[in-house]
Image (cartoon, rainbow, N blue to C red; front, side, top):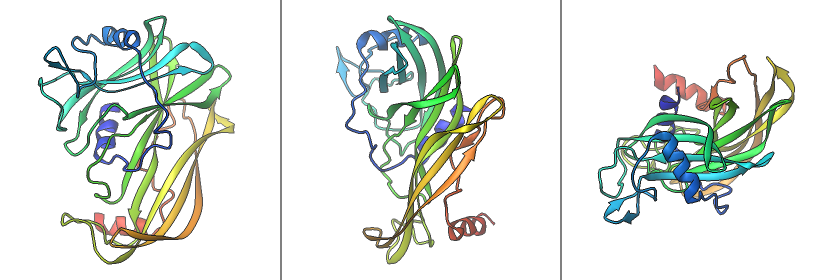
Length: 287
């Protein structure tokens, strides 16, 4: 499931900067080595755009943050360039190894590994991961943590619509980490079909709509885990040539997702917040 999800995520990554872009989440060398040893990764454990002793680094992206309720535990997200060509990365279809891990005293105590393919128009960089330690308390003894994946897209508003800032919630099960929910935290699209269609951005006047999504824990529960609420904070703008924009409307939309005993499913490309015009256009274009 995760390889497919991350490939889709790379293809339609968000273009807006993270709300916490200035909050550094660095990883120390001991933590990185612990994860690399667990994953069987050998080589230069520095950023893949750095050269060390004539070799380029293997770390495409990395973030680390202490678990709030267990300060001796560090949450780690690292993407290793396992097929490094020996040259600086330029973006392209190449496999990256993603490892999500919990580390204590220089040792991995629980982890998950998955391979995902980097799309040619997406650039994974040192700040592509963010660790979300909000209080995702799903049950009395289960607290999830979030990993936000946000690579850079050189084609900001094409295709249409786009989704990004992809959040995955993880829980620990013994020595394993399991993803229980996937969603996007940002979306953008046009109300009328005036965006790029392979010929560059559209010209003229038209409406655009974007949303910032937030996730919260409900008091109700299903199959032993708390229900989750996704709230979309939607802004509609009237734009000229996609540049000169003025806000015409703001509203919110809300959706509840429930645990089915295995997961909350995926709301990655959910359109519950899109207006009727967009949904109808999508059906027409699919015919």
